[in-house]
Amino acid sequence: MSLIFNDSSRVHYSDLEVHVGMHDRLDQNHQVVRIKYGLKHPNFRSNAVRDINDIAVLTLNRRVQFSDVVRPICLPESGTEEDWTGLTMTVAGWGKTRQAALTSSRYLLETRVRLVDGATCQRNSIYSDNLEPNTMICAYNLGKDACQGDSGGPMFGKLPNANKRKYYQIGIVSWGIDCAKPDYPECGRPSSALSMRIVGGRQAEPHSFPWTVAITKNHRMHCGGALLTDRHVLSAGHCFQWDNFKSMEVLLGLHEMYEREDVQKRSISNVVIHEDFTSTSVRDENDIAIATLSEPVEFRDTISTICLPKPGQSFERRVATIVGWGRIDVKGDPSKVLLKANLDILPDEECQNSQLAKHLKPTMMCAYAKGKDGCQGDSGGPLLTLEPEGKYVQAGIVSWGIGCADPRYPGVYTKVSNYIDWIKSHSSDGAKCSDS
Image (cartoon, rainbow, N blue to C red; front, side):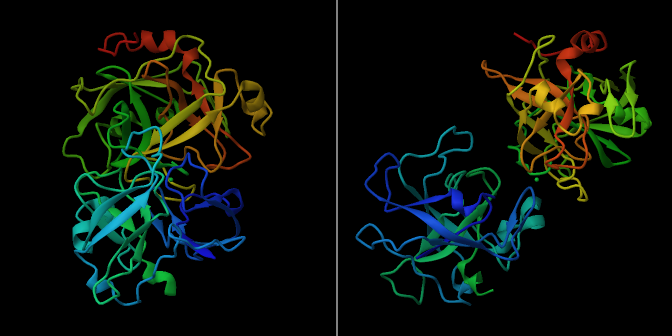
């Protein structure tokens, strides 16, 4: 027996189990089957926003027993797509019930969504840039959507000119922007096509990191940074050492690079690079700088300041988040939307055991996760940790590395906790957030 699945999870099929006939995830009264073989579409590819040809077939290692609670789904006839627009479909899964939820649903949930035409789906620029009308379909209903954990699940319904007693699967939950966000419909991969990432990151929820700024040079993405006060930005020294800051602009309250209606823009009036900054062909040391904005910014929901760690604070073995608009692969273009990725901060001794050891200094820290990394354009951006009291602090500054997401070389970050006095002395005339 085989299952249709999406391929966006990037895990090996041998690590998966299939739970057949399940409703309550805590109830053990259902069949659990291992997977014998997994076949993804040969033309599957992905960027930080969307997945193309996002479909896979998993072959179980044994046949399952059909019953009142276990039955196969029907597939539609090829070439019937024109009859689908406007139909109400069902999406089912155990995924999260809202965007920021920490856990998935215990019980199988279902919701109704309506199929929308490609023109409606592409009203937003993210969808117009990423939708492939020939292999993707969109479905939407206000306040109803699939969410994280529902990927690969079916979108199904009863079709015109087909057996009215049967359900047909016409889509696979693939990708979308957030969950149930107005004018951001979920896109499913049509079953009729059966006839035919910051590196590794995903889009951040808009304005969920309101201190993150983009520094552009001659209107092109140059570096990232974090807002320290209403007039100071913390970034990397190498972002300014060889470039004239007068040709740069700071964008605050930005999410989508080309949607700037509510974005505040500032030129830079001065930059202070750490006095002990040095650079070689491989690494930068004391790679930290503070840029002073031409005029103070106005704080709002989409623009606020980051909090600093305590002097000497260690973040070893913590999970951290990097955010930025940098390249999505080493030879790629900068991202059009703010991306995020989670990394593990390595202990210093583990960092020293890497192939970067001879280039490392105590003022640097390493972070790594398989297939995830900062890349060109992310330099100067913040490495963040969420503290128990619910606030983010900036543990590091994206500094240097070899390649992007190369498993041999972790990313290297300036250790912010080593520079607290220096930072405060060069930003004392700005209004800043409370660290309490």
